[in-house]
Amino acid sequence: MQTCPAEGHNAVGADRPVELAARRNEAFIRFTEVSKWYGEKANRLHAVKNVSFEAKRGEFISVLGPSGCGKSTMVMLTSGLEKLTSGSIEIGGQPVIKPYTDLGIVFQQDLLMEWRSVLRNVLVQPEFRGFKVRDYENAARNLLALVGLELFADRYPHELSGGMRQRVSICRALIHDPDVLLMDEPFGALDAITRDQLNLDLQRIWQEHKKTVLFVTHSIAEAIFLGDRVFVMGPRPTEIVEDIKIDLPRPRKLEIREAPEFLAYVHQITDIFLRMGILKS
Amino acid sequence: MTGGAYVVKKTQGFAAARWLSVAIIKTRSVLLIVLVLAAWELFVRIFEVPVYLLPAPTVVARSFVADWRVIAINLPPTMIEILAGFFLSILIGVPLAVVIVYSPTAESFLYPPMVASQAIPKVAIAPLFIVWMGYGLAPKIWIAFLIAFFPIVIDTVVGLRSIHPGMLQLGRSMGGSSFKVFLKLRLPSALPNIFAGMKVAITLAVVGAITGEFVGSQSGLGYLMTSASGQMDVPLVFAVLTTISFIAMILFFAVELIENVSIPWHSSKRSTGGH
Image (cartoon, rainbow over all chains, first blue to last red; front, side, top):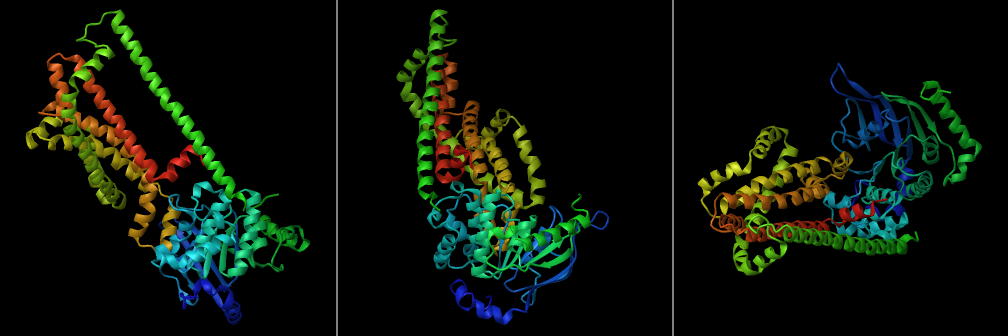
């Protein structure tokens, strides 16, 4: 979509499948032996160690690991906002050396601007990019409708619940129709029921918009439920311990979490964590 | 999402309840003042306190009625000094805070003299200002500024620094320049703190202006007070004192009103206690 930004958000449904089929086997995001550490040699803090993977265009990748293991750092490296120490990252064949802007980020905190209405919070994205904001208003309203917030466009963030606020921040991450969506434990601060709902919503949005998603979570069930693949990450300095392909039909319903094939994945991942000593029985 | 109507009703309900409780609180404070005045009046009458020591509220009120012209004539210069000092402290204080936040070098240069300027008693340097700038409005304005800019700088620095780091990352991921990030993210999110500083500053500006007038002036409420006490006209001293504290109160609530209008998202959050 980089080549035709004007077509951007209008063309989502129309030409994406064709384009997708053509590029199905092309690696879109490529990590090559990526490492990241902070500080000087004596007391260096190693966060990410030798991570290599390839993600196809439109793939949903769950990055699963214990808290503080460095998986967030790994994902943020993709954005170019954090500099890697060694190795290389490519998106669409281009090395990421400065902040890569054709992406949307959803953080654990919704980071809404309290002084802006819901609609204008979504529109902050094109505004910051120097696009003509008016051209995006319809797209913003459509996105809000997609997450059930069409009636809240003119409300202010403090009038919304935590789940609604996080939905707004997802809309903000999608409004400019980016190629890549980075989600850093986006539902970690929500209650279990809201979290389930947002898992369903996210799956629906993803099926409609087919972004390449890197989704950081520490919930095994969430990782399996949403992901095409689950990267099981080890403790700090983190590396990909196992790359598990999730072979479950979509759209997935919540009940699938009780299905034997789902539980098999849970067992497989739990075993890995036990083996690494992250879980102790 | 059927929550739309509910939210509307809820906020309206909150607004009504808030208005009522505010009304009660406001009248309550008036009631307290009335009680104190009554006790004061009784005390003075029962113990026959001489008027040059402590005039009864009714005597002060009478002096107010008799001398309102003198008070009114001396009001404008004091107001000008207060407001000019206050606006100067915003005009200089906020940019100073921005420089301090963005440049560690500037911070290490500016912070020590700033703190030192607060340690010096203003009454002690007021005569110097008069020597330098004469008996006009200027020295009072600068004394008001000197005492009022400090809380604005401190609070603005705190506000600019307390932005969520994720917010800055978000701004950069959207391709915003540092200037855009500052103008659209950092500054608005610091507004609650800036207003807190401004509320302290406005009352301090009153103190500064009056202090300056005490030391040397030919007009203003501070001048009127010194000349009244020189003539042992204690009721007029009290009348002017009342006027000054009334001005301070009005100015304070004016700043608060501007705060409520310009950052409704913050005050409403505060009153409903969030979610």
